[in-house]
Picture 1 (tube, rainbow, N blue to C red):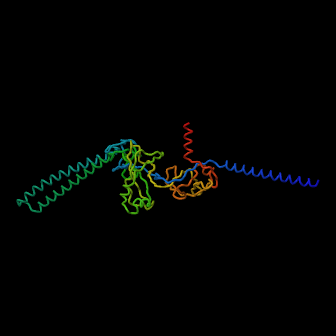
Picture 2 (tube, helix red, strand yellow):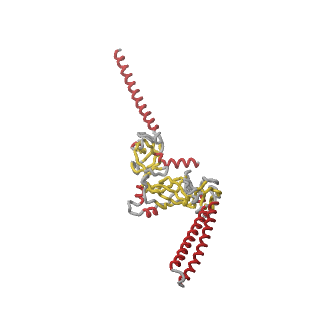
Length: 393
């Protein structure tokens, strides 16, 4: 009886142990299956070197090739404005008329002064000629003859002075008709009929902009200017001539259809800004570009044999950019990388942190993909092909 009582617990214990072992093994298998199923499918690419075509943009302001401030050369009230803002004018076309009354009177006064001086000269000339004849016959003294010659010289000077006054008066009268010095478009007209125009006024009557060609102005810092000349190995003019054609990106983000060319770089560095002014010339198609417009000058930048990765394959944490490398056992490693500031808006050029042949995750970065995550890597190119095929079907 006691022996059976002892044997029954031993058998029960053995059965319980076997059951527990089976349960543990089953749990382990289930956990392993769950871990295997939990590994997400993530698109990856293999890092390779290639040539990169990048862009470097600089903010610019656009000005007409000739932006001429129209200022009066005489003072007076504006009697007529002959053009309107935005109007295209030809060289020599009348823009403004300033009150001419006082200047016309000055011309008539100067003409009268010339007439008086001319008569005085004529009388002095006749007198001097007669005195000369009398002197040659010893009828008058040398003193009297010389006095007549001096009076003639004085009359001649007075005539020249009167003629100069007439020229000045006529010139001032012509200044009352303000004309366009060159062809172009009329800018703002702040002063209208009845306003006082003066050469000393701070505000011009208007501005005439010749915009058949326009200049876009940007700035290069001192370091960039030194790079252009390769540390003095070539002249600045040669460096400017070797620069490639550039694009103008307008304020709405679109690109101007015609290319531009850097024409000049100022030889001096501004002490206040530490930069040099760069002028880029563009043909102005259909007058599309206007003086005062803004945009960006885009320089092409070629990089040979560099690593490029998609921008969405990286994250930035506290000014450090990371890429997510697929390591052993498909475990993700967050790798700090360095990239160029220039980019095409879609890819980064990696200068440090990655090597050709490594694989990186290109989706789910910062969300599904984190450091230590185990993934099921899927070739990104093949996935795109499959998507394209499905869309075609």
